[in-house]
Amino acid sequence: MRRPLLASAMFVFVFADCGAQTVYPVDRAEILAGSRFDVKVELPGLVSPDDIRLTVNGADHASLFGKAAQFIEKEDGKDQSALVLRDVSLAKPGSHTVRIETAAAARDVTWTVYDTPARKAKNVVLLIGDGLSPAHRTAARLLSKGIAEGRAFGKLAMDDLPQMALVSTAGTDSIITDSANAASAYATGHKTAVNAMGVYADRSADPFDDPRVETIVSLAKRRNGMAVGIVSNTEIQDATPAAMIAHTRRRAAYDQIVEQYFAAQPDVLMGGGLANFLPQGAPGARRRDQTDYIAKFKDAGYAFASNAAELKAVPQDTRRLLGLFTPGNMDGVLDRKFLKAGGVKRFPDQPDLTEMTAKALDILSQNTNGFFLMVESGMIDKYTHLLDMERAVYDTILFDNVVRLVRDWAKARGEDTLILVLADHNHPVAIVGTIDDDMTNTPNVPMRERVRIYDKAGFPNYPSPDAEGYPSRVDVSRRLAMFSASLPDHYETFRPRLDDPNQPTTPGRDPGTFEANERYRNVPGAVLRFGNLPRLASASVHSGEDVILTASGPGSEAVRGQMENTDVFRVMAEALGLGAGAQAASGAR
Image 1 (cartoon, rainbow, N blue to C red):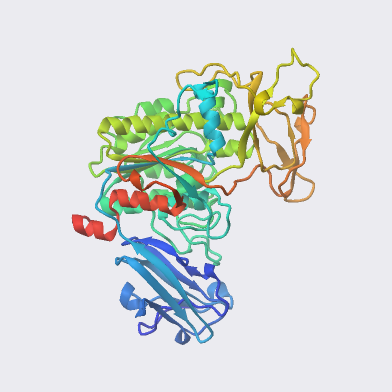
Image 2: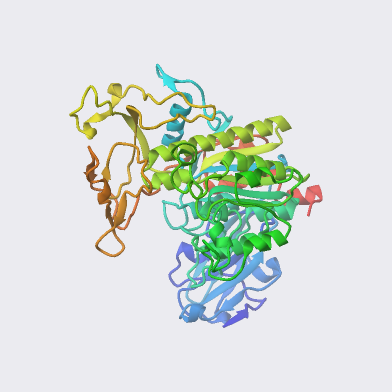
């Protein structure tokens, strides 16, 4: 049963046995002045509405927010009560003490509301290398630039940006994040739990009724009238791109995420994931309803591109674009440009992420109010999970090409664009030396003994890179020895995994478990490595170290030292002047 809390009652967050995760936004949340959010209090048992008081800074919540919270007597039909207040905001900067009281207990939660200075940047480009670790960056530099006598023959574009910081990635529920809550922290300025985006993950059964927080995309459009774009080479419904717009605690809800994309209508939306835009019954469709979202986007005025040729042919004056180039994830560089493996035989004309980014910049920059663009190189993470380091490194070089393109585009415009380059989370990957695979000189040495360390490592002998930074082959005689510290049981071959598909594990005999893939057992030199992960892990996993953030442009001076992942949102909000005070001073909406 739902009913409004009496206006005379005080807004209070209450528990007989209070836990920090039962008040949303959580304790110590930092909230942008004027941004919209939901408030929820979860009570551990049944409570009478007459026994609850909820206040903010000692004042009645209804007088502050302009409406009373809804009281839910039995949430999900269980003996647990709750309070919910939807779509509210706080305009006054400073510390706000939210107190909830019942007859049994009381609890205080503190929120910090911050405003922003006047707008500094016309545009913001957020570039995310999913799962990008320092080892990926180093390997990309070694392969794309080369090295001799201890010095690389150049820097990556992402290395050469003037501002740098370390960014922590923990969520509300764990020290280890996934891409959903990691990207959500960047997009909203609020931490949340694994699998959740744009919401605080609550206890209710419905994955779409969790307390919402406003995203950078919504704020940029609502406050500044900006264009927005989301580009990825993964499924466009995947966690990182979806977190820019979506509100759900279930990242796998692809059909509903497509619906939320259509409701939000970003100006540019490009990636893989065609299957969940097609109506049920259409060839290759994965939707569970009959809605044709490609048709709906077209009817809403979007141009549509399904391959690189169509993308190139999109007219220059196009203002809205939907590009969907594969049913699932797009193929990485090594498969597209060199091996012609993966999905390339079925979809040979996939655009490069640089081409997608360039088209997005062309379209979005037509908006005189500026734009927000997020570009993700998402296959770095997918390949690293599979211990496929060669493919992951080539897609890191791809990501750096995107960074260079955006950097050069911004320089040509006169530096009105804030550029942020970072990972959403780390992988526990390291370069420990090289692998000497020269069988002519040492034909009988086991592969494990061919891992060269310290002075014996020397330097790898990849061919000179092409104009885009890619060596023509990876199966050379002295390769990088790049390993993950998080391992399922698997056969280590010490050689590039160029077969298709690369699956180091297979389902185990016990339900929900995985074991080493026997197809690699007889590969010459293969060694069975017993993992350090529980058997429920099918692949390598994320790690909790800080990630590297580099930045340039107006507002980038805030990038320094060690930061929380939610601070990335604040850097963008301050650069765009999205706070209530900055908006009032400028006379904006």
